[in-house]
Amino acid sequence: MSSPIDGLIISHVGSAPLIANFCDELELSDIIDRIVRWDPKQCRTSPGTLIKGLVINVLSGRKALYRVEEYFSEQDVELLFGSGIEADAFNDDALGRALDKVADANPKQIFGNLVLSAVTKHEIKLTSVHADTTSKSVYGIYEDSQPSEDEDNLFITYGYSKDHRADLKQFMYGLITNNEGIPLYGELRAGNSSDKTWNNEVLNKLHEILPAVDKDSIYIADSALITKDNLAVLQSQKVRFISRLPETFGMAEEVKQWAWKTGRWITLGAVSQKKNASQYQAQSTIRELDGQRYRFITFHSSNLDARKEKTITRRIEKEREKLDKDCRELGKRVFYCKADAHKEWQLFLKERSNILHDLTGNIREETTVKRKAGRPKADSQPDTETTYCLEAEVKPPSEELIADLRAKASTFILMTNILAEQELSALDILKEYKEQTAVEVRFRFLKDPTFIDGIYVKTPDRVMALGYIFLMALLIFSLLERRVRKNLKKENEILIIPGKKKSDSPTGTMILAMLSSIHVARMIFDNMIVRRLPKNLINNQIRRLLVLAGFDETIYVEPKKSSRIST
Image (tube, rainbow, N blue to C red):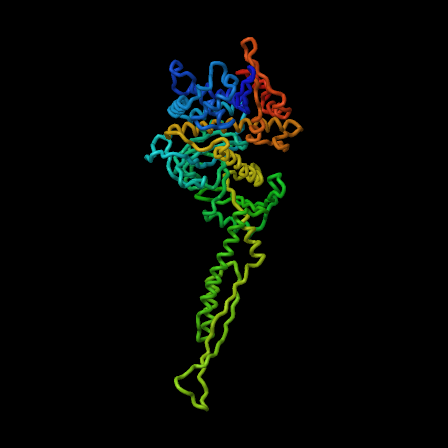
């Protein structure tokens, strides 16, 4: 917040100058201004400048579109954009028109150009790429319409919500990152799109959308990748891949049974450095699927996933309830021949041969006196009748069986067309697949209300443009995180983050939080604006963080000057 005191203005600028300099590194404004159609004579502020403002706003304290002007009225606007730009340039009408221009100009192309700039200037490696999709819920009516054949038109509709908001319409994000989490490709899709279909379309144009991907790069995705059509595309496009074999494939159970029967597990150890990290064992086999040879690696983890533990517990409980009911019903039946009772008990066991519980039973004989009408004679012997009934008891599964069940539930199968163990070992494959979290973590950003709250714009075109601006912000966020971590590894000293916590791999969120306290003091001397950083509001850790980010504190006091000192 700005407050003038005797000619002194103090602005709470936070991380905004650093974000602005990262945008300038990628030439964000220039790329947008080159691609969109606009008339400098008719526009007070260029679309690129306005979009840069939205990216800064997203990463350093997002406000709704109609409040962005308010946000910049409390910022040092000249510091971020240079002279001639005022806060009122970012009014909601101007921002809305800028979003329309971005939508008309193909925002996917704009984002692709920014990614190309990032890959070149930040020397991003593409040895492996990770692909996934997620849903993004929107607020607003957005009249129903038919999907357009033009993929650049966004179809907002109901679909399977990964946000668990079936009451809201949505669109889908498709995202590809490298193993460091740097977005390499991103697009918005119709709200009812399928993961399987998206993978198929991306694979068909992979070398077009990611020119830097070479024949040795590995495409990594979750089990939605594994379909007959997708495997055919992977084969025709000669794309190396790693994915998880879905449990719905008959091959999955067959390979698991083979692994447990063979028992030739190779100990891999832990993949993570975390305390109590899972220990892994593996077995590999090469088999044919639809006429093509693939390598299937069965992995056994020492830790059982909590969801699978619940599934096992629920399975045991449901089976117990069902068996108790069946035993009660069986106990009500009456047999007049012991052999019949025994035969029925054998049939009862046979029908339940695959259960987890143990069943025990015995045949109880009962003799009853048959009563006749009238008083019996004094010397008569009463007639008797012998019947038989079954008494069954349900006993819990043995500890050995439960242990075996848990062990098998702790196995999963990864599938790849890289057949040679010498080229990529089982441990290498597991590590590559585990890095799928790189793309999943980026989805957290796209759903984090700190940066990206509800979307409240009037038209699907503006939703689409804003969705790509969120991807631009994600790219900047990821590059900032990568550079700080990369430079931090070169030093022996860790970073002290807020709360006096120590970190050698701070997240982008931590980095931005550290910078959120920065204020800039401005005063006019001889018709010139002089800026200073109050010493009590910037400490050595913040100064160090700026250097780790590739800049220094001069970006807070010198407008529109590149102060980068390292990469």
